[in-house]
Length: 288
Image (cartoon, rainbow, N blue to C red; front, side, top):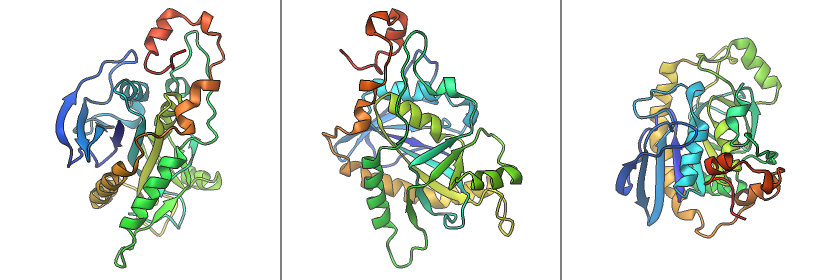
C-alpha cells in the first residue's frame, strides 16, 4: 500500500477509485484526520490531509506518531509526502520542486518523534533519512513532466531541509543562520514524519514545493501566508500529476534497506519488553 500525505494546499487526491474514508484509533491519540482509501492503477492508496480537511491543525500540533502508526497499521510500505517550503538558496526558485535527502532538526519534540521508550529502547540509523530508491522514482517522473521547453520550473535532486518549529515564519536573523548552517529549504513538518516512518520501516520521500525565499532575500517579497497559498495553488496540479506518475512505478515487491530498519536498532532484550508497550507497538515491531 502507498500513502500520500498532502500538505498545505493539497487536501484531496482526485483520480482515486472505490474510495471511502476510514477512521483509525491509535494508542498515541488521534491522527490528523480520517484516511481516504482507494485504488489508482490497481494499487491501493491511502491519502491523509496532513493539517486535516479545512486546514485546522498547526504544524506544532501535528501528531506524527498517530499518523505514522495508523498508516503502518493499514499496511502502508511507502509514503510520498508533499509539502510547502521556503527557499534558503538562490538556485531554488519559487515554484521549483526540491527532493531533499537530509534534515536539520530545529524542533523541540524529540520524544514525540519516536515510538520507543516505556521500557523498549531503539536507536535507528538516521544518516540517510530518505528512501533513496523512492526518491529516484520521484525525480525521474518529475523531471520528465517538467522537461517541456516552456517549463521554467526545475526539479532538484537532494538538499537539506531545515525543520523549524513554527507556526510563525523565520526572523531575518534566523533565516541568515539557517543559510549558514547549510540549509537549502525550510519547512515545519517533514522531520517528524521521516523519523517515525523509518522507525516503522516505511519507505519515505518528500516532494517539497518551493513557495518563497523565506525572508533572507531582501530584494524579494518576504514570506506571507497569502504568498504561500497563491504559489501552492499554482503547484497543486503539478504535484498531483507527479504523484499519479510515480504510483505505478513503485515496485510491488520492493525490499529496500528502510524496510528492515529495526533489525539492528532495538537494544532492549526481548524478554524484558513490557507487555503494555509491546501492545502499543504491535504494528511497528516486527515479529520474532
